[in-house]
Length: 551
Image 1 (cartoon, helix red, strand yellow):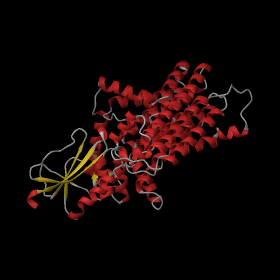
Image 2 (spheres, one colour; image 1 turned 120 degrees about the vertical axis):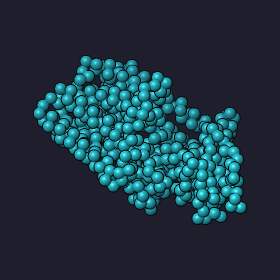
Image 3 (cartoon, helix red, strand yellow; image 1 turned 90 degrees about the vertical axis):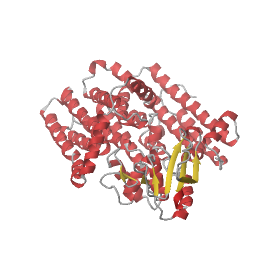
């Protein structure tokens, strides 16, 4: 697939295609493809859009709300940005599409700040590899295209690293930037956000030899003062405006930090998660640490190493075991990986290069096979699986999809073929391959994926079912957050919670998933409507009951 190593330097056109302009276009294609143009999806996309929609309605501007009730998971930084972008783009995009732009913004900021940090720490040649490795991380691709508040925390962690990396040359400016980043991390992730950042800021400045001077010490004090004062503004305002809610939030923060002890089974699951989530960063990071093992107290290695150790510790003892919980770890691992790219031996660099090309070539073939299962029902086993997971799905526009897909694959092949020989070749190939695969998957599989995960048909069907009961009270019992968000967005319905098994409402809404497909008969109630979506583990049902004593 590749030509022999070139002896001449890259041409001007090659430097533009694979330089800053090409990198910017690559990141843009990666982030914007598949970000909009589809419905609100089950899971985090629906769950975290709920607070954004409440803010668009003028509710929960100080403390996030979901369906009229306080939403404790994260402070409002991401929701503020998502609501603002959704409002600005309201004439062009649907509210949920506009809100997802915040994910693209925070991911782009992460890529930029990690790249700038690598430049300050390791030199200019590592800036582009750092950017390529960051957005090429395997675990980032899905979460950067959904409504995900932890992307804001990830970006603020990268912002803090960028500030700390500037301290040796600009102590006051770097420390103030790091202090501001710590405060914003508090606004993005709460107290865990401060724990991700403040100790790294303090310890790296105190220990690293490059910062042993009075200017750095003074900058550290100024940065800490800014972090404490600015970070306390939102909790203080919440305490003054809504003291009861502040007390509930404070207890929830403590449970997030100390509510889960060390567990061997959870540790094994965490290792499995990180092994693929942070691929291909962690092998490169381990090589960097081994190669520079005698210089680990230098700031360029101490900063990401401390951050990694702290983040892993918080993850082990945290109560959050979801995939997005690993996102704040990404900037530190990306910095370690970028620092070791230039020291890779020729054999390892060539292996990474070929592995990147072959891996994404194979996965591209698998995506095409999944498309043929939809269009031609071949292979039969996969076609039956698709039919089970997305019943009643019919693909339209197969020819334009095929043409666009072929164009994406050809462009990737040509860019990989013409890629000049340089130390960052493997990282470039990986990032281009990840972008190609994501764009190909969106082009060929998005209709099927949207059919299986969309909440719009459920919301529209429920609207019709509730039409004869306009203005009636609807009760519910323990609806999942994504369903509550969907009801608020698509049906303008906020069910009244059932208290102690009693309700005065005439209507009752009951949710069931693949673990309990049928809620069964409920004494005193008659099922009047039901809706099913998805298949297998994606199976969900919503049932509407009417009280019998109301006729």
